[in-house]
Length: 412
Image (cartoon, rainbow, N blue to C red; front, side, top):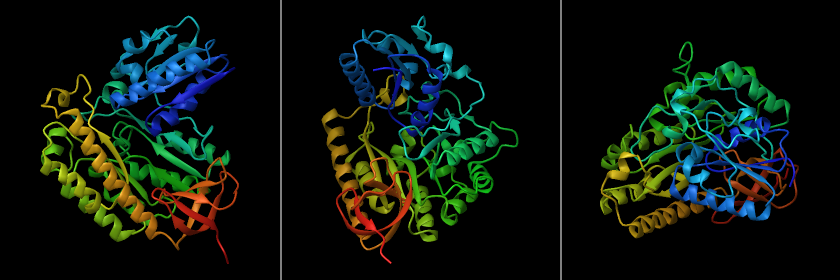
């Protein structure tokens, strides 16, 4: 290979940052940068596996590891013979970190105060992912990510608007706002703006943006301003991904979450009443320490009670250094069984939802292959004929599978 290849794992924020990494490392040759995730042990295992494979396929390439995995577990990656350098999250967008002489540069992420400057991440993606927030001030007992990202920091609205405008000028029809704790946007900025105010300003100052999508939200932080935009603004996509994690109040308390089951279900009900086409996605953890069968049943029921059609199911993964890792653990076989059960229920709910859309007309954004698209509600759509990548087209839904719609160009 030649040039720089960036391999992103994990969240949409990593996708957004991938372009910044590419720009920082520009000019290097035969360089592969792995932008890792550390949210679960499985995510790190997959990263190590990919690093080893890349070294076999590209034996002459220099391999650098960055991202949350590198920040939290630098020794683990530095010990891999395939890895030439380990760079922490605070330095991964610095050109100096990619100098050949650098083998390790991992600084204190909690000391990070540099102004965040978003790049437009669209290379290889139909939609542009734009960072508006990073870090997290909360300490959920299962989560190691604050130690990979540091405290919450927000991007000034003017810089976000400039980035969104650049994305539109580059031809992107959809922008995704990303962050580690997106709904905590703003308290660290002058005037303490909210995420809702940021969305309002984007829509006002970039009138040519057709589609604005929000990445994962904390349901308890959705205030009335943001609620009104999600339920009443057609340019804000009718798709919300919520960080719910469990359907049982005791487990939520042990997770140190800040919402109750009832608050989550009530919010979703109010959203669906105001804008019925909003599709709900959610992260749910199966097998959290101390979870009983009755507690697990609450999470299973949450899929129906919360009208969840985009379920992201994770088996609980103990992360060293987190309070939950010191709690009484369930047997791993039981955790995996519960995750499989929850995943099956989520998949059935999605299949039923997709089937309910047969006969509808959808506006879809065509992906790079020209035959796959995403509807406004984020349903995957398989097109009957090629369409121009990156364009928005109207289609008639003719059928569905368990995980996608089938559609053809609209008829008059």
